Length: 230
Image (cartoon, rainbow, N blue to C red; front, side, top):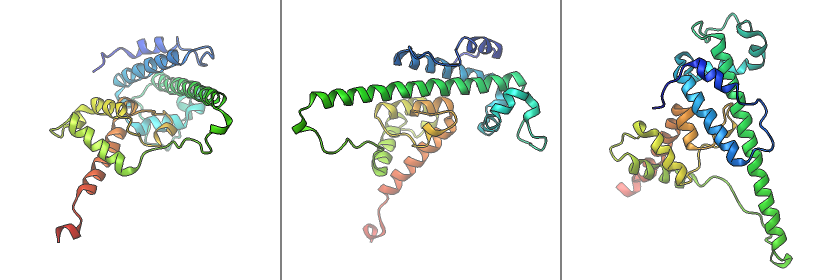
């Protein structure tokens, strides 16, 4: 578990990160910055238990533009979700983290897209016209059965005793190494998740649900059909 640091220390450090990411930053520098931001965001949440509820965070994020202008006055008087135990500075810090993490992730995605385009262009230039492929490369998630089988196999390897939830970080790291596709909706979330490790770090409850689902699917696939039993 990461060492806890005081919220005010996190507040001081995050101010060092620019709102806009420098275009001259390399992909490696951006990835290091994103890792730093996520690590500090996790520590920040550890020091603010009232903000650990995803529902509460989503409610505040929905009000982000108004809240950053008006503060607590932006909260509807009829709402019962918001807690008076959460300080204005903590909410603003959380929203800043989300904004900067999203900004950094966008810059990384753009860098990767540029790299893919350059590689594709170079390959086309290097290949004789007579040998040019007629169809593009097919990309996308693997079949559901294969994903379920991979997840179940890795879970069994990491936690043969069935206690994979206690080894969530290790399990998710193994899933990433095996290139098991993570849920397609994750990158579209307010706080984008672009790997199983992201899920384990930023939304562990979400990662557990996804793994539980695939393990259940794998068990159903292995269950003998009625025809087999008869």
